Image (cartoon, protein in one colour):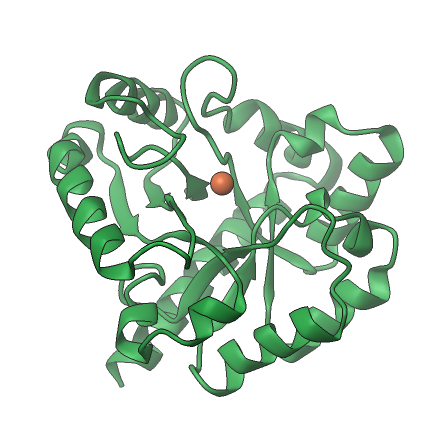
Length: 242
Ligand SMILES: [Fe+2]
């Protein structure tokens, strides 16, 4: 099972404050059956990209050895704030923000983002000029996407992948939870993640939430969903290597 969105890397953003917390988070994920953890620290394009990549590498080195210990594979990436500034960076640097070896870039926006013309332009530029596939982090946070499904459909048509935070399947309003499950069922949301930051306020809760999906959509569906997530990552990876 893949956790597509985590802040497990220590001492880099508002995620794990130190290595011991990172280790505890990984252990918790492993116990729940997670075998792939995407490491996606926040990156704001107003900061130096070179500095971020160096810091990410330094942070990754501190937890690298926990992978074999917990039987978890890592995929290094980022959660990048999509702004005009990002698009002014060199392509080869932006590619390093993508999930390791793929063209999948986890992107976030201000919560109040209306996904108007300007945002759509940024997304199109990322897809067309940089040949990157945006993964829209926690779509449930954006009122514009939750209240107007046609906007989400348009983004998916353009080539975006929608990601849902697993906790939202358990903690949102009845209507929102039902909608998220439908997005998963209908193939609109193809990635899920814990978006875990620590062991207290935002812990790596995976299985309890997956179990809700199993209960509503069936074990077979969830198995296929995970396979499809894995296939999508593999497909993007082979494109890069082609
Ligand atoms: Fe996040």
